[in-house]
Picture 1 (tube, rainbow, N blue to C red):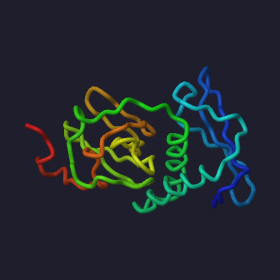
Picture 2 (picture 1 turned 180 degrees about the vertical axis):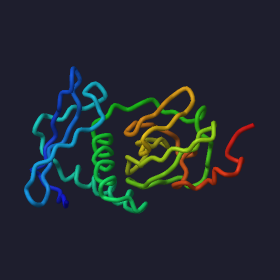
Picture 3 (picture 1 turned 90 degrees about the vertical axis):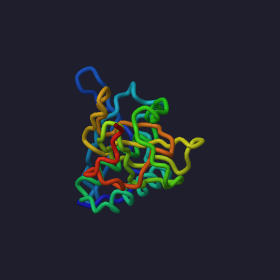
Length: 189
């Protein structure tokens, strides 16, 4: 099934029980209508799109960058499209969390600039790894917005779920899976 970006795509909300979720109405190349519900509740958003707000050129640019980053990992379309749409919704509308990092993530100190849509990893001081997509073309100061791609990531006192946005300093961001976890060098004593 092929989707071509179109201004016929629109932002929407869907209600499940007592919770409203951000959603996107889209059409494939055969004109069939589809509905994509994000994981973001209305109260998670810093900006609310109007119901029926059209998909914009800026939306298309972001979505394309996210798809390209995920395709670099050779992800199948069935995973790439939903993750890209989630990243788009996250980048455009989700409330900004406080910056984090020094307490939870290992410093990497390597590459200092990352590009929009690039898939990167964060390594926990507890030894785990989480994979994220870069949501910014340019960081705010030296702080990047990232969205978790893994289904979940247990950080000990916090459980992050797919779609969670974090804001971290570039010093803790690693190129995708750049540290071998089989060695004990990524753990603190």
